[in-house]
Length: 169
Image 1 (cartoon, rainbow, N blue to C red):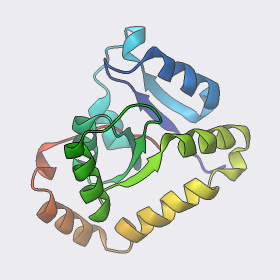
Image 2: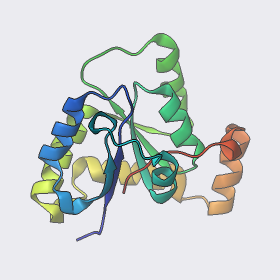
Image 3: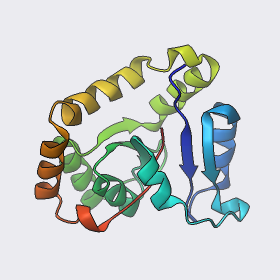
């Protein structure tokens, strides 16, 4: 209904079970392309996916992916894994990035239940978590004009011109 297509990539550290989760909850017709390292897909797609996406979802356990995603000057949703721990330095960065409006943090449990709902009832794509994410993105990024947003982003993130990254939607 909304024409959203997912671009999905993994890293060499991504567990094969991640593929199984996405395979269960996302029908193939909503995935534009995917690249799974554990399936020996070594295409260098990350920069193209980042450039092609409107909203970037990235797990919080990868500081480098978070930085690359933020540097793309697009809406970034950081997904908090249910298991595992985040060290104090990364947690401080995440809290700071959220306070500055660079990311919206979301627990993985919420994302998984919402994505399941999306795949089963595509007409409900903007349900509670989706609406919250879009409102937060609109508030943090959509109110300013594109040039003001780019200018304020570059002032607060001086590496923004030297990075490309990873995406969805």
